[in-house]
Length: 394
Image (cartoon, rainbow, N blue to C red; front, side, top):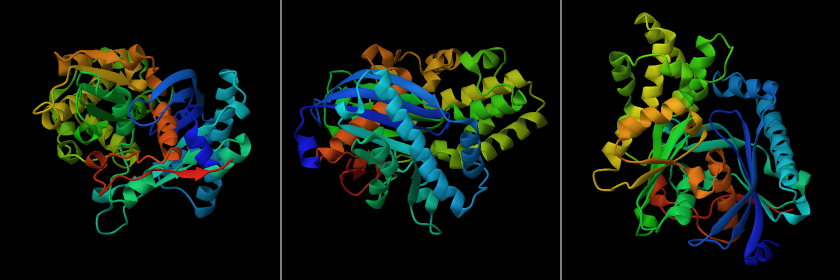
């Protein structure tokens, strides 16, 4: 069955992703032609399906506060699998292609905990855990499903992230322009792809916090009335407190050299609580807090570029994706911080800004069934190139 899949020149593939913001499931239906360099994609449909609020709250209680039991984790793995299966069914309906006409699903799942080598230290094994049982997805949809991409890279000595860099290269590399593909989700990450050159020249890493700290701060400062600073309007009313921002930028992760990756383990609720406590001791207004936290995201990105990219890797254009691309004030601030490098939304390349990572896991699944190694050792720190993911036949 897998051999037959690998021989198909054109496949309809669903990509499923839920990121560190835990807002819901990004689902994309795409046609993928070929594999490896020269892969061509066409998006048929995309939508975001919010998690049920009760499920989202249970996830936050585990991820941010550690309130859990083995029974809870066991159940959630299957509950989230059901939610991902429903997302696949919904996106097939939206794209007006029945499930029998879809050849493959690639699911990232929902990260519960991510502990790469430098975070694990000597006490724990390097490890990662994503929930969203792929057997449930395959059973409910009748479609071969590839999932659990990160563990193989960690088993090979890598960070298990960022994995999107491989897809960034095969879709955007070798086009004559040096691009920085900047995604701003809960965490911000960048992939530098050369205009000319091979996969071994790609550089990618998590630059630091993206929307995660901003969203949590907005929720707390508003007393739960809002879940985000939409368009950055709140932050736009304030002024950056440079002393406060300097303290935030004095963060060991931001100075750490790649390969590196991070998540809610570092920039989740406890981080935001500490930040807001210090802001209160400085008697900052709410709008000044939001402006300063927006600047934390943009300046940590620009610092990463200066420290780890621009010294020997020129950038002709920044291609922006993720939910942060919709935050008008954040994008304007980033443009000033990174000037004169132009910033373009990835939509210009035919990919909706919030669809990029779901699309990436559709492409990674295609590479897996085609038997192609799809990690980037120079990016993740893995010892060698390996094939990522576990295949659940239909």
